[in-house]
Length: 370
Image (cartoon, rainbow, N blue to C red; front, top):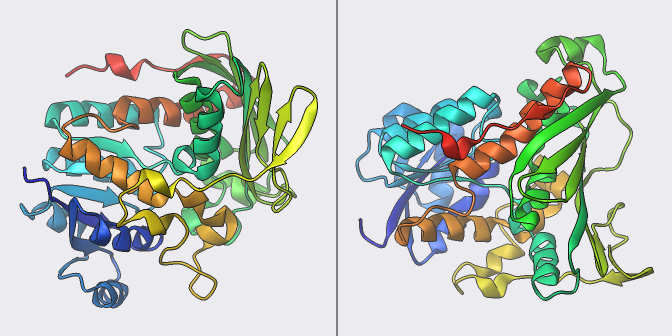
C-alpha cells in the first residue's frame, strides 16, 4: 500500500463533516462518497468536487481503488456494512455504536482478524478537548490515583429518524462509557443495571424497552475502580448533557452539568472553574483548523451538532488516528476488541435492567479467534 490512503465515506448526513478533513489530510485521498438519495449525493459530491459517487454500498465495495471506508450510516446498518467492508479487504472506520448485539460485535472482531484490515470505532468523546485535558491531568499527576468514574448522556431524541424511537437507552451508551474506560486504561468486566421510569406504550413497542432511564455500575478489569453510567433518551426532562467526571486522589475533573457554566476542577475541597484548551497542536497543520470549524455551522446545521456542541473538536483527531494506524501498520486506538467491549457494556447493561439488575459479565472479545 502507498502512504496515500484512498478513502470512501458512506452516509453523508453527519458523515459530510469528514469530507474536508480527508481532502486536506496529507496522507489521504478522498476518492468516493456513498448515499442512498441520488439527488443529495450529487449535491454533496458536486459541492466538494468528488468524482466517485455511489448509491449502493455494496457496489462501492467492489471498487479496487478504495483502501478504506468510513461508515456514517444508520445504527441498524453498522454491523453488516462493517463486516462486508472488512471482507472486501477494506479498512473500516465506523461511527458509534459498533453494533446492536453482542453476537454482531463478535462477528466484527472475527471479520477484522480474518481480513487483516484495521477497524476503528469513531467514538468522539475520547478525542474531545475535554477528554484530552482530563488525560493530561492524569498523566501529569494532577489528579493522582483514580478513585471513581462517572459518565452520563441525557438527550431527548424526539424528532430523530424513526429507528431511534424507543431505543433502549443503554444501546447508545458509548459516549458515556468510553471516556471512563479509556482514562482508566482498561476494559469493562461486568455490569449491573437498573431501569427507571417508563416511556409511552407507543415507544416501548418499538424495541420492547419500557425504561425512561437506565443506570449502570461497572466493574473494571484488573482495577479497584468502579464506574457509574446513566443514560436517557425519551420523556425525561433534562437539558442535553454528554459528560464524564474523574474523581482523583488529589483532584477531580467534572464536566459542566449545565451548558455554558464551565467545567470544574476540584482541588482537594476547593472547586475552580477551568478553561479547557484546544489540542489542535497534536494534529498535522493541514487539518488542525478542523477542531474549531467544519461543514456545519450556525447557517448550515445538523441536529447532532446543535445538541452535541460540535463533539469537542474530535473529528480531525479521529480521522488522523484512523489514517495513521493504516499507514503505520498498527491497530487503531479503538480497535475491534476495544470497540466491542465499549459497545457491549451498554448491550449487557440493558439485558441486566430487563432482568431486574442481574450482574452480566462482558465477553472477552480479545479471546475471539478465527
